[in-house]
Amino acid sequence: MNESLPMVRAEHIVKSFGSNNVLKDISLTVERGQVLCLIGPSGSGKSTLLRCINHLETIDGGRLWVEDELIGYRQKGDKLYELNPNEVAAQRADIGMVFQRFNLFPHMTVLENIIEAPMRVKKIKKKAAVETAMQLLDQVGLAHKAKSYPGHLSGGQQQRVAIARALAMKPKLMLFDEPTSALDPELVNEVLNVMKQLADDGMTMVVVTHEMAFARDVGDHLVFMDRGVVVEEGDPKEIISNPQHERTRSFLARVL
Image (cartoon, rainbow, N blue to C red; front, side):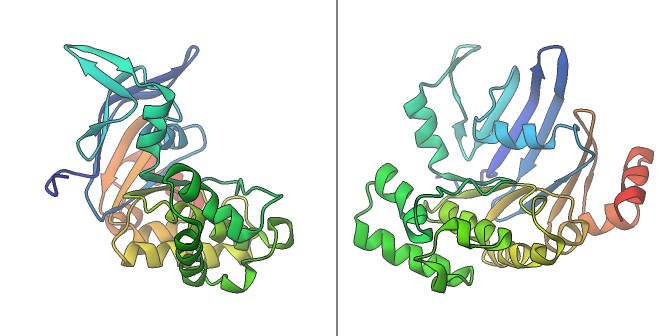
């Protein structure tokens, strides 16, 4: 691992769904320990870009690295060849992802949800997996819910379990795709507080969010996307208080 390399490097990323060109020549960098917030209107390409970072979506052009590893592909000469599913899964094991929907296994307890992937994918012994899971549940304030089933938890609690589950794989990078958008307003802060603690602990994070206060107060770098391009990027406080581009101004006027 080369400590001087950025955690994420996207160069000239292009992605289309049929005739819909969703990402048009996107380049950006996420430094180690940085919290990058992606904002913009629905359909601007934010979630698609996030999903490309762990190869949940293939790319049609460009290159994407996490540390020094080309994600999803092997390069020979000038050509890219897609990795096989096992190789992609190995790359994903180091990249945590939290979705809008919690995607917890309903038939498993909270504890079972968290220990499943470390035991199955990383071959961690059950005792060690349980120990780590209980530490993580304590970290997200839910140690008392270890034996509960997801259906008995609030949305905010389920999302905090989903974050603990992602952290159980000891990822070097965490991706959040609008993690609070499916929550009732009064439950949003309990999830954002966990994310803020992760940021304080130095976790590298890429966060697609509509929570402007979080982006301003926790984000190190802000990227505003619209119609598949990066319109404006820089210091979150500066962009939110004094956007330079008309498209950024009109978007922020609607959401602030």
